[in-house]
Picture (cartoon, rainbow, N blue to C red):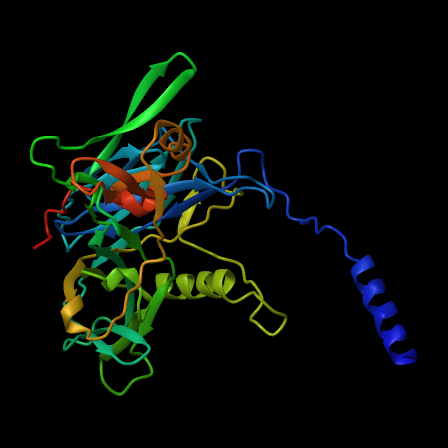
Length: 387
């Protein structure tokens, strides 16, 4: 008992000494500029995202809008990037001259100029394949590549996952508002009163999820210039493989400078969870503020061709995947008061019980909106690449 009291005293003293951490780092009110992205020298999209550093207690990300962003060649050729959404600057096709060097040029709305160093265009070898291995626990996807020329030794990958999703419950009915003497009430009517079919516009959707980790690989220490790297893992029973799944993998050939920069960023963002992890290190990029040489800028620009590969996996290819929807249905009597009450939190699905003659509906099945309407999870517009 005495040892327990001493332990509790130490524990209380430890927690009592906790104080709010105030970072000693001082940043301007507008924050330092953060430049994220790489330049695709080929026919594909180039996207540069401009943001500002924020204080630790800031509620949201601050994007740098209304900037003029362009790629400028050493021959003074200029390729403009247009702001497609706040802080996102894009070009659908640059087709740069591989024999020339280029730099990223940014003019912000407050008339500051930021430029990267001139960098060479790098060729990225094709992706050999994106393979997958299925076992009792789930699905492991991996990327395979090699460079017979030996020119590319540093790589980065990212990916976008898209999958077909079906609402757990069909939706045959819509709410219809009634103005009664006791106030607004609701009843139900068939979505399609003639053919009595379900609302297909909210039954099939296609969610998309982008990779969120920094995936890097190098062949510098390998005897051959070949890489086999895990991309992502899908746990058994995940909704992503409930019907049809697709992953679009992008591969970038990096310079040693950008590779080292991303390695530090990866350690800073993914490996600072305990005192045993590598401590955060300073990120030194190749972008500078030319109007104020002392102002720090976060970012490292590379220029390369981008290789892409798309892989499809059907649910039938992974036997006993065992996806089980977490959705539940609730039976509601067919009367105005019950339906009006259900209107607050539920979507109507389909008829539950009929009268003995089949002419009247006695009750309906309802569920939470996301279990009846797939657009809560993704778009109901079929992607152009979908089979």
